[in-house]
Length: 475
Length: 99
Ligand SMILES: [Zn+2]
Image (cartoon, rainbow over all chains, first blue to last red; front, side, top):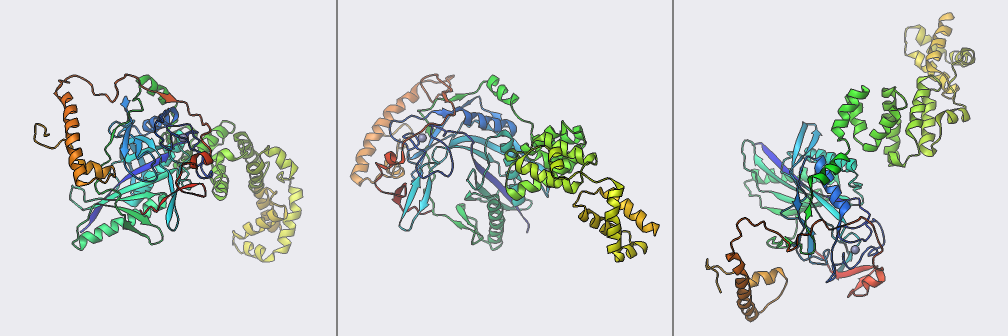
């Protein structure tokens, strides 16, 4: 029998605010333990929380990007439970009136493009971090109170690949909004996933299990791949799936049942009496809407229509807001859009992935990139030399023409100057010359390569190829 | 005290478990009686006709009390740990957490 999986995600997103959700403590990562805390985030009796407006704004902006309906009236509630990471013994969250309801995220996987339905997006406070020692545990409250936006999907995905595609699409949206750094190493995105399987052809969802606290995209993918197989095998063996909470063990490559925190999950939600409701007038929502950036999908389509870029280029460029901005700014100085795109997609993106840097952190300006592409297009510099110049621009910035002159990288187009290298290459490589004469046209590439090497990449390859041909044909 | 439907208004043993309170049988019985009385009394508000009245979580119609996103210094780690029963490397030490 074939089985269909149903996967839902709860993604916890740390928002990029300077201060915490309900107090003014810093939200920085990596500080000494218990350095950014105050009576409010420690839950001292008598302290009062106050809402961080930026966090509300980011949540609403994200909701607008996903086409969610923004609640005109929403409120915060207390979720009660006992755990050392929560000093108040309740977490301030949103229960029945979240900031955003519904919506969807467009995803693309090998199975094609489709949209994943969202259930809600709400705002809450992050909890403290526990560290474990041999006989006791330690608690660091720096993270406690960091604004945490929770994006909850419907059980709408059918494969680990789709879940991964959802996370990538969501990350793209969050980075476009600027709502989060989405730095997984720092725990900016953490997922709980739920998963069930049912026989093909049936409608009712199977009994689900929940896998808690996955903090890498690969973890989500691998845990789901394992869990689906586990559930299908259990059903095939005639077992019954028990609803449970599990954790993913990377080393074992398996999910394990967790000890349940609470026999019955009775969180006794009730309205947070210390916080007033959030009432969003259409006017306020419209103002935020106007400041909303173009969605990656829309931008991709516009790149094809406006700049005549191939679909592939448009997708790569629009995928990252900073990269897309760089392209558009460079394109305003150089109308050879395809060449600008090529340089970004090959050299620049490779540099970013090798160094782990972002576009914003590079001293390269859009104008410099556009000028460099123009130098190549105008035959002033070879692409080999241009790569060297781009390396310098990305490392230290500057003006491409100046760097070209200073390093003596001006392309040699002069036939007389090049003839010397050509004669040398032909004399030194009789075998290639012979091959070429016998009709092996590719042999000429080797000879051109020798000339390029001798000229330290400065020779104009088209002129060299022509000179080599003339030289051989003449003898 | 039972409400109209004959159901208990409150299950003290359950609430005590959720609140991590260890009550003796006698205490449970005493609190059951007392809290039944309190909940029963508060239940009187249910007799009010609230047709057409919007539910609200607050008695005052104040809304959107926001704070600007500005970070400020909080307490020093020394101040914060002064009340900790046990500490280690700047951390609050608690009994071992088993997940
Ligand atoms: Zn604080």
